[in-house]
Length: 215
Image (cartoon, rainbow, N blue to C red; front, side, top):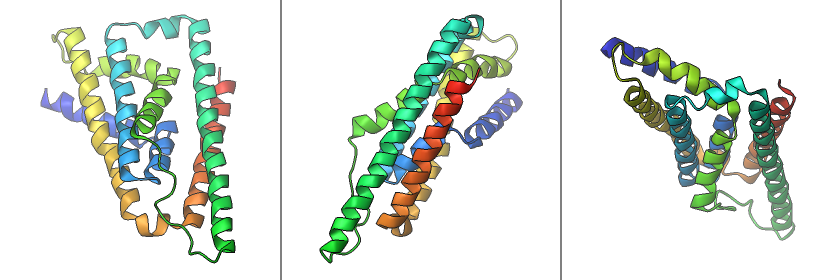
């Protein structure tokens, strides 16, 4: 059992370390505030747990068996990603315009206290991005059963592993939020923050297009 647990946590680390849409969104939201970034993490991990529970009941097998169901979710996920990307790029442009207006008035460059999304919007963004990704559902179905201890009841073990996976990733992605917060002095400069938002918006947009074209 301890060996299985260590192997499971090691696999969770590799999964979390793989860059993806959730990582980009968490970093982007952390540029606003640690609170916003952490709530995005909680939303994302709620989605991880939901997909784990769905996989435990075997419902995600429907996605692998039905090409139509998978394609519908894939298109929905692509639309969500493109929407997040465009929203981020628009916000970066507004930040640039606001900085230009401040500069014309002779004011100092604005810092960290810019536009701040509500708590629910941050949580909802992380949750929606995860639930709209059909690959997350299929991955949970193939990932979790590998670590169910031999002889253990399948359903409770799968749900328990899903909960452990989500809690572990809260801690892992929390480090991202903490690191961005530690870099606050540099990242709070309007120019730096705008460039990071432009990059993250572009990445989310490209990921959305890639998901739409993926078969």
